[in-house]
Image (cartoon, rainbow, N blue to C red; front, side):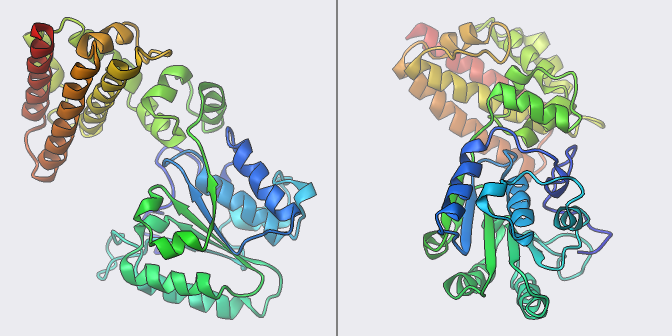
Length: 363
């Protein structure tokens, strides 16, 4: 990877997964791996699945340090900070670990949008060169659902005839995007969204302070990466303003709506605009669920539960909300793709929510 290009496997505002000291909230996945190792079922291919930012890469690096050090299941995955293999991994220089990730594009001036077959050639060179070193080898593919077709087919060959003493760990945010033949040759480790308590500990470890873990756990869908983004952009407060604005539905306070939309336009609002789009999408998803299953147990903001029930008081209204959510989500993607004015796009979305709420109230 060129020093001038960012590492595509890290998340902004968080320590790199290879440098993360502890993994929180994923004890079940850790125990499943160790049980497989203890039972002599250490597969050559592992598929680590779950939403982005819940610890898949952190677990992969911990497994790599464990295996490269030749440890058994009874040792567990917690290694001392001065462990030789762990130190080499954190420095990004372990000779028996290869990380397959997106590389530079043809011009070399930015990252490729996909993992291409050129990166697979580097993996084959790694297998050839590391075979003389001895010891177990590990490969982390981050993320496997970013491979193009040629790279995926090349990786499939390695999974079909894996090199001796080698473990391949494929990180996948959307495993359904992988070739079925790749999925069938891997044992799956499922990582779950984090509950508020492990979320709070993970955020503290990452240096994200002053955040409300319960609200962040809801707004970020249990993802530490998403929670850090929300916290850094003061997303909890922004969601509170959105809930307060919509609490008057079916009548929308137009001046406040215009002010909120205008706050996401212009210079300096590059982070606020996409975040508010995500928060609107989340609110509609939660409203649709509330219409089917009742108000959520945990509010992401005071007054949210009452608003969700107002938007979707019954299953019929829930279906209308779900339809609007899909419509607005598609409109947001299109608007960002063609660079529509952020303020105009957001105001239009708020007015469409008002129109829907008016229809629900009249039904």
